[in-house]
Image (cartoon, rainbow, N blue to C red):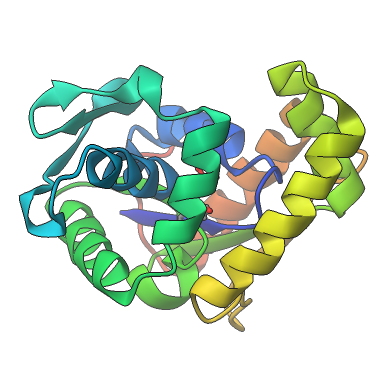
Length: 210
Ligand code: DC
């Protein structure tokens, strides 16, 4: 089973994807973390062809066999990942890797281009949307940082992320969930319902737990 989730930075994708992966017993693949791991490798002067990423259960990520999970969420990696995500050679390698992972097991895969490019035929496609202010508030709370500087950073990243690939798009079969003014629990409950409905519609049993 393939559940694809897209949305802009700070819309709550990772939290929702985590909850769905647990509920439907799938591997969670956070593709943003993969771009961050490549950024880390390139910052260590590795060539792209020498960068090998493994996605493990429980959101662990290996760079050439070393667990780098704890090194990925720094302001430097926010910046660098956003820059290297604009490189077509980086995208080509990571998209191929992401498709390979999704062919081998059931996944909840989240990112920016999963519903459109990586897994356009996923069983369920979700798009989480939220206002830039709500996204900045969420990030500021999560990271304990100042709201206005986060707001500015998110605006800049939205703009650069939009230049990296064919902008965030919503395909006709994608279910859009707006997360403004909703708690995580409310969004997760809506997402689970949306997945169940979509799977029933496609007559796929998946591993639904009631
Ligand atoms: O979701 P995130 O902030 O961890 O993503 C890190 C960077 O990678 C972000 O600048 C957008 C980019 N990215 C991408 O280009 N394509 C994806 N599928 C996922 C993330």
